[in-house]
Image 1: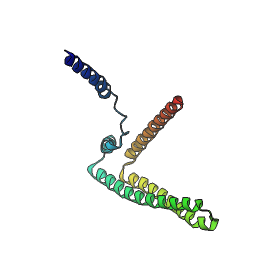
Image 2: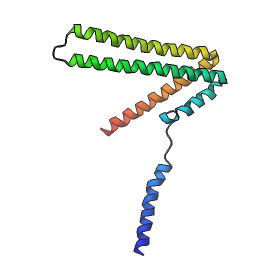
Image 3: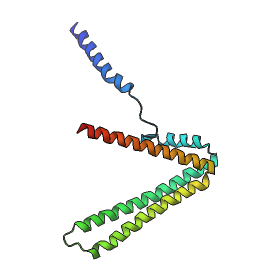
Image 4: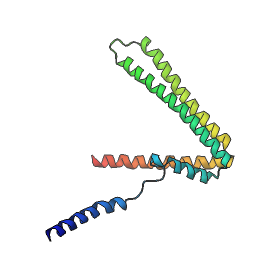
Length: 159
């Protein structure tokens, strides 16, 4: 009898742990990075892209991602070098200036790369598709801003 009671208690505790987890509301679409393919697929459907447009967009994204990753890596290295130089005891403007110039140059290249990517997408899409794409991006930006504000409010409320 004691074993049955222990078993029932264990099952009840297990159910109490599992039920809230199973019934939890899933995260908002696009929130999880693992669902990038699904987000991409949804966007392609909303824009009603042709097979050729899908291929060009994917190729453009791969090229842009590679360039941006390379630039970001170089930028992070130069920023680390700048921090190291600034923290040294014998720092001077002459030591910092060339590194700061390189950081600025890499930041400018990064901005240029992003702008090139935007215009590449604009060339692939029709004017109507591009307008719809801009609307979707604006909606995602607003949703992200709202989530950040909610998170900040929760953090303030905990204090």
